[in-house]
Image (tube, rainbow over all chains, first blue to last red):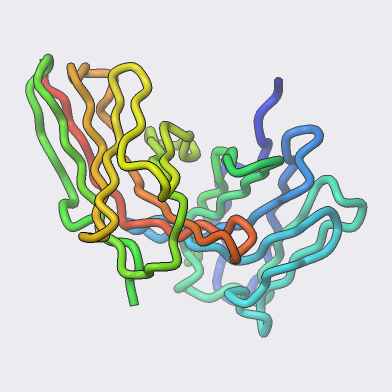
Length: 111
Length: 113
């Protein structure tokens, strides 16, 4: 069974530029999560999807962050414009039950 | 506020000995607890979990203990192996939160040969 796929693995951009991350969850997993992980911290939930519906986006900074999961399968997370403080690892996870399976993450560096 | 806390950022253990990783939580609504293991440049992988109706769950070398009155859980690894060296995250969820996990800061375990 293929795991959660994320791309790109690494991204370096200058501040004020836009950036997008892509996630393909495990086949059959209806629930998809985007997490932010700062250095030395645990992952923090940004948004959770049940199929194509965002059921918990309370932690998503909506002034600059957006996400979509149009067909209820893969998802994109966008930041526009990026700020220096957005440098972190962005993790995608999916689940069908209580266990969440994580992708390798995208490490974003904003210069 | 940090609802899940791992107060030890690092732990070093000799191969073959027991590793004990600790986690404290503040939210009494949490009813499901998990441990994840993370290697560098990889995402966290599920290790073991425990429901609040239990006080112990064992899977091979890994055992998780839950003390609800103290709002404390611990992960025991015995015997520890060099391949266990990784960052371990404790996570918790409440049944009414749709599976939302709250993670601790992580503890980096180093098992020395």
